[in-house]
Length: 158
Image 1: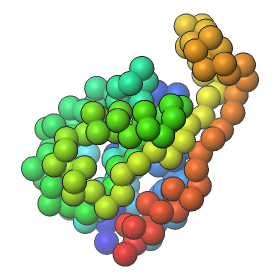
Image 2 (image 1 turned 30 degrees about the horizontal axis):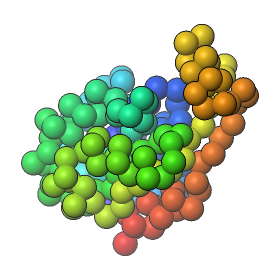
Image 3 (image 1 turned 45 degrees about the vertical axis):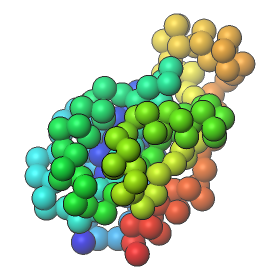
């Protein structure tokens, strides 16, 4: 069984989650960062996990265009979708439904938020200011829900 984890990340949290997922999955697992490249042949994968991060209410353009370009192929795969974001659960649910097509979300085996992390060493001045003023965050932290990562992995193994 081959699994593809396709993700787009800004600060690296979505990549960290993708790597944790890869370590928990059996069989052949490939990671593709949409900021660097695109997967070549989706037909060769049984399972596909899509991951993105939410910034100012939106998912990365690379993820949005990847899903739009490959929607018909994705609809024929075993799919899980996760997002990383700092908002409250209700807001993240809304942002998730706006980030991915309804038809795809209706088909997914798992869809949800897995938490977030902020690494101040990776933030530019503007993003540091937003983290401090808007979020009230003054230092780096990780708030990833390991149970959600386990849930995705278990879902894909079934």
